[in-house]
Amino acid sequence: MLLFKLVSYFIGYVVIIVTGKTPEKFVNMAASRGIYLWDISKAGNDVLTLKVRLQAVKPLRHIARRTGCRYNIKSKRGFPFHFARLRRRKALAIGFVFFLGTLYFLSSFVWFIEVRGNERITAAEVLDVAAESGLSRGMPKWKIEPDRIEARIIERLPLVAWTGVYFKGTKVTIEVAERVVPEEMDRRPSHIVAAKAGLVKELLVLNGHPSVKEGDTVIPGQVLISGEIPPLEESPKPGEENKPKEAPKIVRPSRFVHANGIVRARVWYESYGESQVIETGLRLTGRSETSVSIKYNSKEIILSGSQNAPFEHYEVETFVKKLPKWRNLEIPVELVTVEYRELAGYRDERNREDARKAAEKIALEAAAGQIPKDAVVQERWFEEVNPGNPENLVRVKAVLETVEDIGIEKLIYP
Image (cartoon, rainbow, N blue to C red; front, side, top):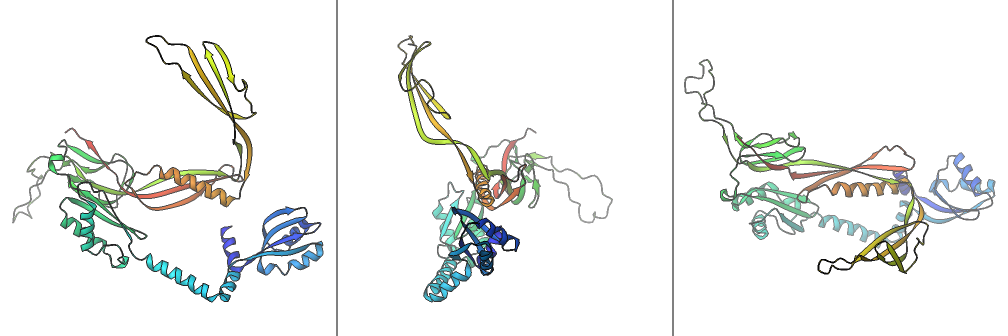
């Protein structure tokens, strides 16, 4: 349907109003002759509003005479009509092209720079070093070298253990990870394990032994950086390379350390959303009634409002206030306020495209709610899922791809 509307826009189409005693016969005869009409709606008694492609307007004259109907063109839409207007207004067309060119040109520059992950290092220090490497506001994006900037920041700022430079539109994000000084480190042996499944993209080992490499797929709980450093083997002496191999000699046993490092991985989050084409139910009308009463033990006295519910369909909320205790004495008197809110039935109809957009919005919000704050969303896409009732229900799966640090500490007891 989207492709059809796109083609119709470039070919051109018109909105026409059909009047007569049998407009339905007009529509049926046009359909039998291969003329596609869409967005047909009733505008009154014996009046229909519909859309048709530009080249099919002329054949409709014969159909109108055969059915005793008349039609008038209400509006003309599509690229040919817009282009014709622009040809009459050359200054407007030139201004529009100039505006698009200027917008594209400005989007090729960096206008916003954000520093994330810094705690002891100020953002100004990171931006100063980045400026020395050519990253500043107003710089063309094609002149910026992320690798050079990352290397410069690590070289000039000793507290930075790792950094990454990311582009997103006209915004550049500089993400840094600060070194942990020995006094601040927990000395207990531990591993760095995966908190969630993902595909390893970057690995930086500050302490410990790497158990995975870039490009590996990991599952939750898998060891990424091991706190157990394996023993070293004795290397052969000169001239002993051709001797028969013996069992490797262990110079020193394994040692256990507090693993530390950064493991950034690609992680995918999925969520589903669904929307009905024809939706029915109950919703609030805005009308409400309140009943106030005093309750003493099992007796109740109505002060205002009705004792029974004033609406056929409603939702109710009750508020109870008790008298404060006096010493150890509790007075069994309560002020009860009951609010009735009226509900009325509704029936909403929409096309499948609108229902799909609503389902995409629900699925996207649900998937975004699973993403941690420090994650960077790289890509997102939607997939329509075949529901059990495809005629009235549209179900969509949203997938968000992020890059985030998935490593968490796990103590080991050697």
